[in-house]
Length: 122
Image 1: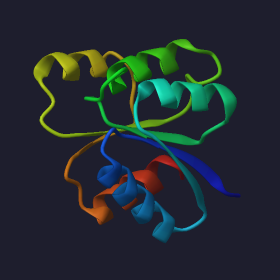
Image 2: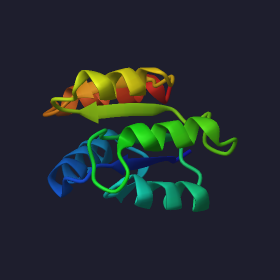
Image 3: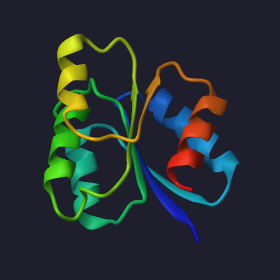
Image 4: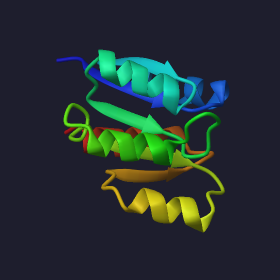
């Protein structure tokens, strides 16, 4: 069965790298959002099996997206992997309030992303 993954990052390069890495892995339907506002709209309209999100984004950061997802009945069970670089302590504290399935530092190596995604979606 095809798993649906939403990749959320304001960097088109990072979205493309994550998407290409996942496409090579196998049977995944990957969609992309450029910030938390766009991601929320997509999550309200579609069902996803996994969300990969950056934290530091304009308009609505990943920490706000995670808080919304964990408070909404429709999205609270979706696994989340945080992809982030240089996050300050305050954002880490906010994100750690909510259960996420993994953290991956950017820039990440494709095999690191592959391993964590496969583990979460087993």
